[in-house]
Length: 211
Ligand SMILES: C[S@@+](CC[C@H](N)C(=O)[O-])C[C@H]1O[C@@H](n2cnc3c(N)ncnc32)[C@H](O)[C@@H]1O
Image 1 (cartoon, rainbow, N blue to C red):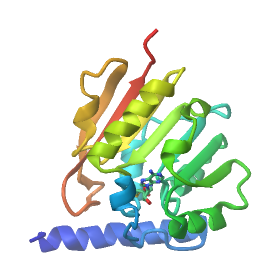
Image 2 (cartoon, helix red, strand yellow):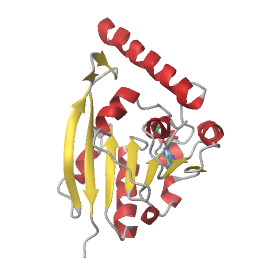
Image 3 (cartoon, helix red, strand yellow):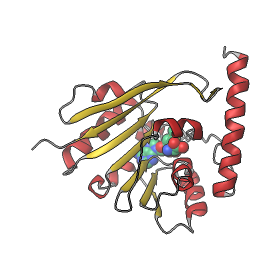
Image 4 (cartoon, rainbow, N blue to C red):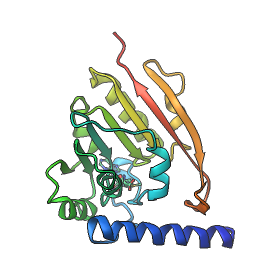
């Protein structure tokens, strides 16, 4: 059973998220949508990352105009909303397999020239078009491993990967050729609130293709 204090605190964190969503996108982006793509694609459901958590995970992030960011499994676009609230003007892409949530992200970002939402499978993108990758655990472990294989087989330049909720599958990158762990921390109680219902972890990686 979840501690009632954690539950209450988490509700406050969600209420803050709702307010920020409305300010940036004009609507709430936090309602969970289960995935119809679990069996076919190893996909997780559409759960939005909390803003306070994004503030911590992406704290050191600076995006110059010529950077190119992609949220792999962007859901309704919470991460994109966070980046826009920080005023980043570089190219920002979200790819989302579930049309039901991709359409929400497409609609509210339509007026931002630097944002593109691609409805489709993350395995279909060319990641050489990006230098900063973000994932909020979009895939189950076996699929994540296949995705990492794809990156290693196709990337010709270095990238940085922010992997939020890496507890189940982040170990796969440990000691892997080309991958360097920049930081890894637990994330649960931030700014006086339990932003998740249970402890989570995130990691930040750089990947450089072997020469
Ligand atoms: C946990 S949600 C994260 C949403 C958003 N990134 C955020 O942090 O607020 C993961 C999303 O990844 C999507 N997803 C899972 N597998 C995918 C794939 N192969 N291609 C594109 N999207 C995928 C799911 O449909 C889901 O919306």
